[in-house]
Length: 315
Figure (cartoon, rainbow, N blue to C red):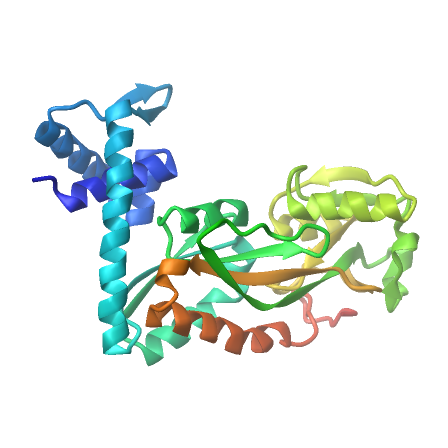
């Protein structure tokens, strides 16, 4: 008889692409996942993984097994949902995926609140980009995702996935303290031409928003520096190397010599919670979504940003 735990390990490798990523998702070590798959190979007398460069690929037989595993895991999930629903209390393990700034600025508050009120719930967080986490929810590798989209790029929802809006995260322009725009209370998009910009790399939603918005205002953006982390962007602004558009969520204290100036109208990204339709009845899902929505105003209204030396900035 095939062992479900070993099938789960194989399914995780098929979803995440590597043994290491599968191990991180399951909460195991890579060697433990490799051992599970090695036992499954002996059990089935079939080669399941083949080396491909520095990674691995599933053989055709392994892919068939992974497809079976997904169906079995869906049945197990349905049984767990029914049991948890009958108990009426959030419980069991809940795998949550979240993008970086929400993992820093929102999820610690949410997870601590859930742990305090529901000790039987074992919520586990993974920091994953939104375009990846939504697919992981659809494929059953993650129970709940916190993702975002921008006003110019609505998020497509795969079939079988439901969502709820958590709230809107506003964005501001960061400028050096001695920049001519530092004394403005707010800026219009037409005023942003001719600036040296610090932004995320091409292909990210933030980069695409900046390019589309400034071009619509009649300016061709001059991208001077690219950095994925907003903290890195703020450090470059502090050094006087350009200006940046940065969301408020998870921004934290800014370096010295950085001033925050608002845009009118203010750009925003919308935070959403996503889960599989089959898990919608699970109390853990419902309660986590309720908690996200309940605590969002507290996070969004934390007040003016303050620089590391305590100087208030325009926000």
